[in-house]
Length: 329
Length: 267
Image (cartoon, rainbow over all chains, first blue to last red; front, side, top):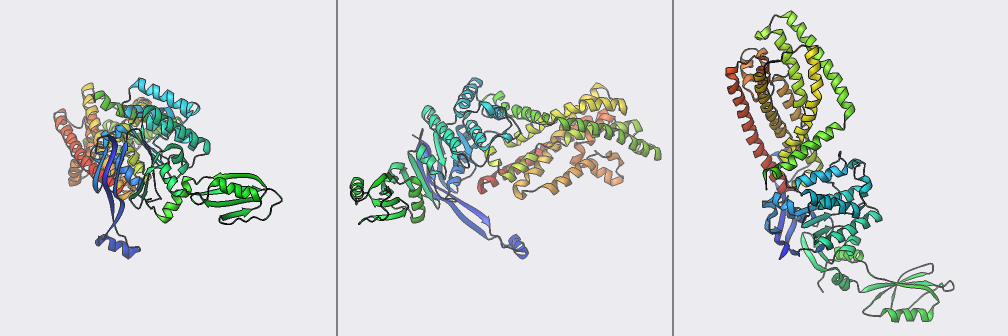
């Protein structure tokens, strides 16, 4: 049975149209011209317990709106939604016990208090039994390496430390589902890696379901088997990461570093992307020419000091889909 | 869920607020110094005023000095406003994260305020001792003190509801400073914190006695100085609880509307 289910979920925001200027402000008082903006348009998806799903799309695609409906702080305009059997907006407080949230841009820690006191407060908020709390605290402190700043007031923490604190805070009550909204934004590579390791481990050991919203596709590549792509409020792709890479990633790049004596380079039937110094980048479609054939062609004619193949990364694929739209295979 | 579990978060909120207040230690001592000075100046002011005019409104000088001093000490607790956080949370958008927690937010603001209040109540103990020594305020019998305490708590709750209502306005306007200034001024002057309501002339006096603000300062203070005879105590406290019920109901309605606003507009 799926842990999250939505059917034809739709959210329309209504606002009153404002005319600029003083006269305009006066007109706004009397005429109520309502402007509608569709944020989510018929989203149907189903997540199983223990899944780790990347929910991605450009800014304003409707990601946050969907997440807010799942947490119960937004009421859908129409459609159905169930999170662990609960309709979130009808039973927000009960739903809150099942979910955890991490916002990269917004901390849920208490600014003036030492980190550990925020955790204690959360223990009380969710009525976590004390021994369970102590076990979680010990485990999270170890994985996230929070020992040395546990008693530091949150306002004095670095962004990386604060985010680690926020992750621990979101997990303290053993939520079944965790929503991660841009969790690695602004972090350095080490902090990013620490957090990715933490998520992967919690997902594996506890079977926690994660929905990850991010613009950093390295997060998705590292963590998610499945991605849901949303654009203009509609789901345009829902499937595995491999399938989309397979479909779009037929082009590869052969990077050849020539020996010093070879300033000129030309080869029939392939596209030379760039040729800077000794490095030549050759783009090829693996359906048209096999990599080993191409490599043989190059090495037969030129002295080569180094050669490598670049696989298409998720980021370049997603970028292409944003620009060109998705086409089903 | 047991009653203890329901209560657990709110007790913890109060404890954390108490601890948070305690971190500003320097402020504590400067406040104490200025407080003693204010108590003394207030005494001199009323002594001088009474020198001009013998016993206005049948309140003798010693009762007036008691009134003014107790009113000042009460204001230290009543001016703490746990609901100010609503305004900040709405403006910064953090209210959305709070709504994702299994708590009733108005109770959170109340318990946070109580935690702050308890800390400041502890602080005014030395001020009370000094006032007793410096200004010689009257101390009524235990029965009067007990009734005063009940009346004071009722006034505290009325004051919380007023502050709550005024800060919830932030959900619509984002800024509430002007409204807040007005209400604070009204509750200080019309509530009897600055002067006893008996000093208001004629029909104005009758009106202010009937306003809800009287529940905050005037009623407990009149019980304290003995201006209100014991026979009228039950009725006076009933009026306080009447206002409390009305404001609490109104607060619940406005809070519902505010939440609906968040859930339809997305915070």
